Length: 398
Ligand code: CTP
Ligand code: MG
Image 1 (cartoon, protein in one colour):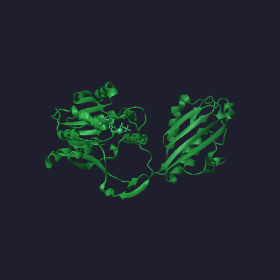
Image 2: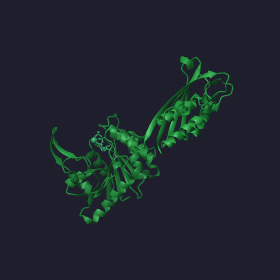
Image 3: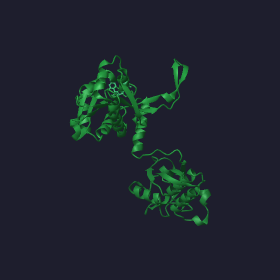
Image 4: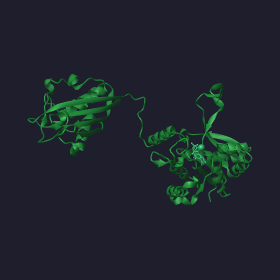
């Protein structure tokens, strides 16, 4: 049997989160906090017993969840019902551990993104403290306090507290099992963490470095932060604030002319009425061009390429789009993404959307999303007099 164990307390009701469900069962980016916490615990290299302290009214659900996450390691897991407060829940977890366990870590399921390395750090520090101090040491992961801290009486500030002597502590907190059990047995008041109980009973507690990702999900804001951390780990990065990012908008309209070929979104539509214009009348390509230019603050297609310039008579849309990309490059910018919506009755773009996206993306040098809509029979597009397109472009500094 394993000589080490982790008690995961997950029996709280999550009042401050206010979702009306036990916090450990609330999903973070689609996966319940308890599942996330357990997966980390079960990934530890050495064999480790895992006791999950669950809400008393959700025992069956919790057993199924634990069995599912643990798979072949299910034999190392136990689920027990929790108590009225965290103190009571920890005691319930400690009670079912076999005496052969030497070291126990107590962990909040609500700190569901705590990295495995933090568990290993705490286990190692408890182990090395065993020889140094009679009865062993307790170990808490801690981070320096970064805010200025004040002592207050009501809303009156009494004094600034020297923050160099303060740390914020996290879980898992680790202890020699026998000593922690003794501490809980003699505890006279409920503490908010296990190190408090251990210390109140005369134990020595040391710190090891904590990890910013081991924060406790307490409020809705924390839930958003947890989602952001998961997205970041998955490689879905938010835009780096040091990068200059700009947005552009472009709109273009051309009237139908049945006597010219139809070119829309850089594709030919044989048999469809074409669009009139000095160039090929490709309103979609022109809207994309204008969106790119506007994102760079580079003016518009008429001003840059000249609506009557003979060099552009009959020019195809990609001449303008590639021209805009070149002007952006000269300005130290590059396209990140473009979206364009085609507004009109014909041609129908649905069946050729992928083709159009590919053709536009090849000219833009970044992904292009194409959508289409009609205007429900209203206006010039509804009457079939012309085609409109509206585009947005995101560009960034190179
Ligand atoms: N916990 C527990 N049993 C309780 C109370 C809390 O097992 N009776 C656990 C929680 O599930 C959580 C950890 O202790 O993983 C930290 O508690 P906290 O963040 O306070 O969670 P809740 O008590 O659920 O939240 P709240 O205080 O907002 O109701
Ligand atoms: Mg609580």
